[in-house]
Image (cartoon, rainbow, N blue to C red; front, side, top):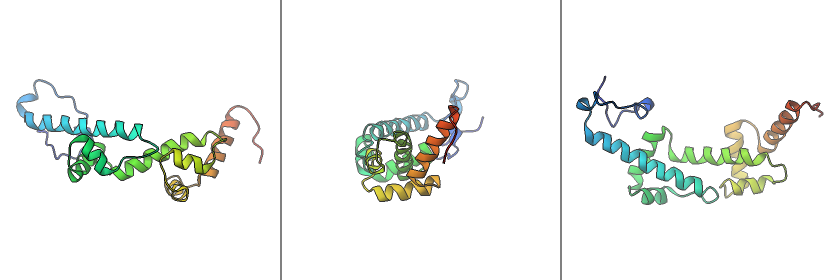
Length: 155
């Protein structure tokens, strides 16, 4: 088995199971560092999830995990494979997609519920990531759902 390195950017590096036969090859300090990094990111992910409407800043997440802003940003990208800002945007858009299923909510309400402070920015970000605006995406989802239930599609 190859020697594991903390700087290894291979995503399956973090998913490997470490067996007792591997221990002589692995520096225990590196293992501890990896586990601390995973723990810090897990704490940050929990904070992000609980504060969806008011997303935490990089400084708040770093402080919460006990790391500097720069180091936390580095650790987050190493563990998650994506920059923090991209992760936050995608998480908020996923929440918005869930909320778009409720036709009683206005797009503006959905934007605020998903953690966007500007509904216009929400619409631009949504279109950039999905290829359609929130209203069209909602309509397509609604029609697809109706079609699956055996109801004739009418336009």
